[in-house]
Image 1 (cartoon, rainbow, N blue to C red):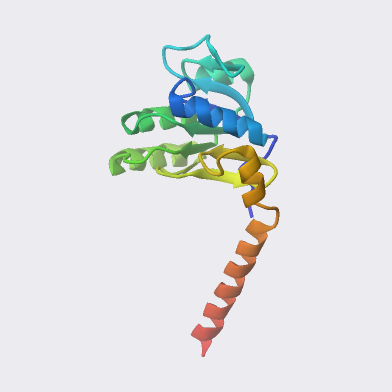
Image 2 (cartoon, one colour; image 1 turned 180 degrees about the vertical axis):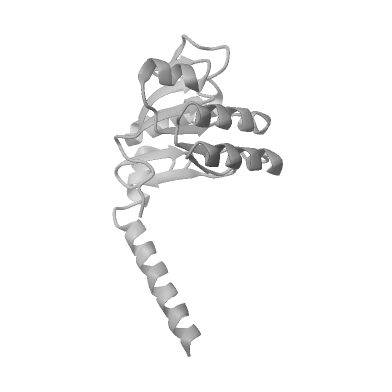
Length: 175
């Protein structure tokens, strides 16, 4: 099983100066996520919760080096441009939180991801959480609550159930 987020992954928050971006940045950092930069066009040079803000993902990568994940808290109409700019900056995972993203936009994001060897989750995702390691997106809420709700081993129990189900389906098919 691949671990998409842990305490070592370097995270960029697109839309960090907005209400949701700021609130979720605080919650992600409280959980232990390594948020290294934010992006809001036209707001470069500011800081949010001690996190430097840049105008574009490429500027953040140029200034700070490799960034592993970008999480988007931008309006649906801006998701395509924001995601593609992150992918083209060399960020290998884009987490697209907004809903109501047009299907054609999602298809263009998929094409950009494929062309650049990247992945994306969403649109309309709560995000990703690795118990005790890190969270990206809206999943989990307050850090203390998330630690209580999501325990180590959860993903292994799920994988184990999935493996048992696949084995059962395979055996049933052979009869």
